[in-house]
Length: 262
Image (cartoon, rainbow, N blue to C red; front, side, top):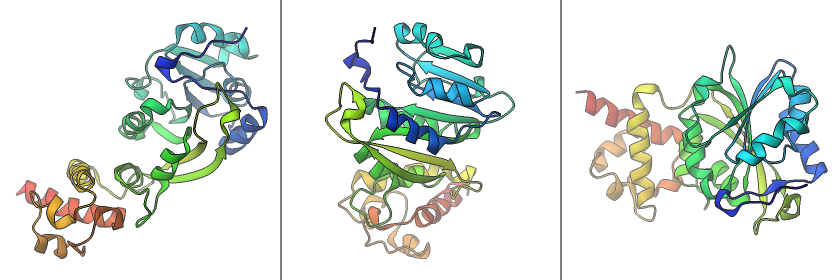
């Protein structure tokens, strides 16, 4: 008996077997992988993940689905189900000995805050393969100058390589969402563009810049940097934020962090 999707959790269950095969092929799970699956739902991805990987920790907020999950896999000893909210999970408690490969069909209504939550826990993540609303994936992967570029892209790309892999039609899910979906891969950078001591300044600058995205940097960053200071970083203060590279934002953050340290 299939589970009735619950609107309060934004449940849309993947059911298309061709889509499942394509996602599993993109993940390419290995026998020594430790996978963390967010929102396993009815287990359509869980089953092949458990079959291929060494261990799968599944985080499911719906108690009914969590109770059913062990029954859909053949190697239940490699599956560990946790009832909880992915927005509050501490990945450090799951990562034992090696970093997690994260997989998730992320609810559209919490996708952005969940991505920022995961960004704070990159130390425990080897890579991420996530299904999201297509427009969100476009925003995540947007390059400088593209209309979709905003705070999400600039924050994620400072710490991860972001790839938009392929689209999924609404019919791949039950019930079909009203929008197309897409699968994205995020791989933490070996050397993040933003160093630890500059992370707070970077986040503040990006937030301020895109808080007035139709305004120039000269205006939005005025509380932190003068126009001359922006120019001194090799950045045109007359630009709007979507034109900047991650490295240019990092240069601005380095100056702010240095000023704060004095």
